[in-house]
Image (tube, rainbow, N blue to C red; front, top):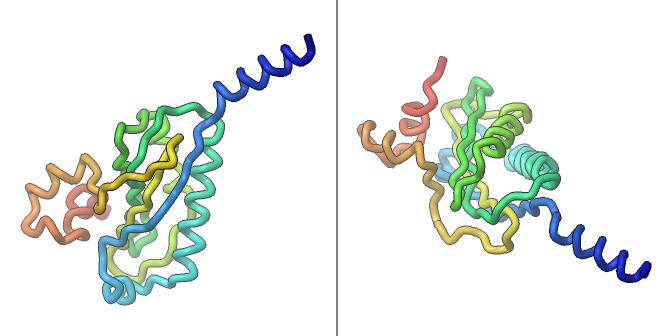
Length: 165
């Protein structure tokens, strides 16, 4: 009887496992030369992205979510302001999207001496398979690209969606 009860409890716990969030490669929207001009320190950037991944992992490990894969895109201005977008398929529920946004907002950003740093991190929730998309493209960006003079200029694109105050 104890063995049966233990088996049932093990099966139930396996069914209610929390979301497993995995991260993979980082996509830079700017060239290495541009990153150097922005004063991006590789060590500081590495610590920042690891902290970001850890905070998101901790926040999502307590919840059950459907499988999703894509990118977390982060923009950091030289004034220290930070914003983010998710480019996930299927889309992450708005509640968790906002939770990730809040984590990005609260984490002290890496220093950017001029302009805007924009990068994406591959992210997978409850799946070991990461997106095959080569370039992040959050939904908000499609309309914004149509309204700017150079749709390939990432800083112009980000500023059109996220203007400086």
